[in-house]
Length: 76
Figure 1: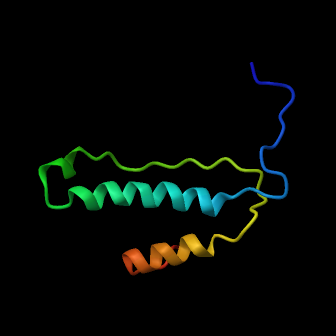
Figure 2: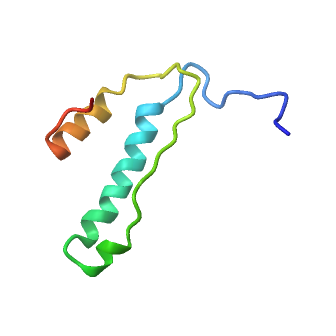
């Protein structure tokens, strides 16, 4: 059964880009730490499911910049 009363944790917007960036950077640090080693095969893919109120507190541009700088491509 779902709760009837839901209260937002962050008033004034959802830090979507900030949280996605934190998760992505943490995952990439794990990958970088074992690049070229047999432990690289042990790292699972990063799957993200984002459920939000649709009102981000900041734009996703810092996350987009990180992706472009890291991988040399723009998100679609």
